Length: 108
Image (cartoon, rainbow, N blue to C red):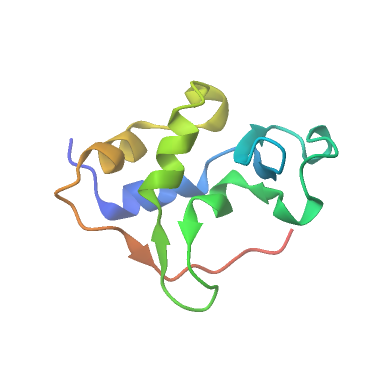
């Protein structure tokens, strides 16, 4: 089975959970509810995982960030996050160029 860039993008859009920047330990942490971060995470830094893995500005092509995906994989909670085979392939195939896509954020 071949995996296309569309498969990888769709897998990234299905990711679950939230990421927030923890000031005291100076790293991103993952939670599965916006309300479970605590006071050491700035509310404005809390982002759905499916948005966190893309870098760039809305309205211009965004890049699927391998470093951020790897940070999620390092959490060892792949099934809860929804990390699937297309994303693992993207992480391990450094011979492939970074995926860039124009994304439209859905309201709600």
